[in-house]
Length: 268
Image (tube, rainbow, N blue to C red; front, side):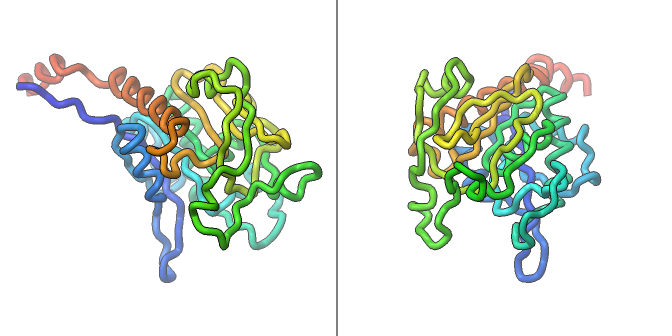
């Protein structure tokens, strides 16, 4: 009897969203779809339960971790600041979930891909800090989208990025020196986290992609949104496919092969 190999499972930490006065654990459809269509994996949305989650048990269930973007910002107390404006949206339940999860995943050699807020979470989890409002910093561009614009405009090409020579991202993108990305973020890296290496920078010098140096598996995060219409963008597909391959390898390394599983089934 043959046993079908299942696709790797990618954990996606949820945000807390209010709908009709009630809180929901939610993850954006575009991220979930990208894991299926571009990474070739099975998505599993993880509730934002903070310390109530058993991280060891959770990491036994998944083969990779996707940190998504969100309308909310990383709470500034996570990097030693106070909120710049009272109307800046935060999500402390997500922070309480993702920060220990990031550290546990990296310690376990779990593949990790961070996007936008997830990029910022990785930086802060590694001891870095953020600009709460990049556009308010002298000499920096306004990286925010126009809220009233159509989605095609919001997620359209916004500015170029210079890729770090010899970096992981440059390798994934076939040796490209520069790419053009969308831009929908108000916050960004101020102080780079320990053990992170810059993989791409915007024209104003803002770091917009990082990798975890010495990571045992794929560990990359980007400030832009490669998940948006991912199957129509070869560069975005390259990122998600590399992540998916790492998750396949993670699953293969941690689970017995078909012959071993058949023996286990016979014994039971």
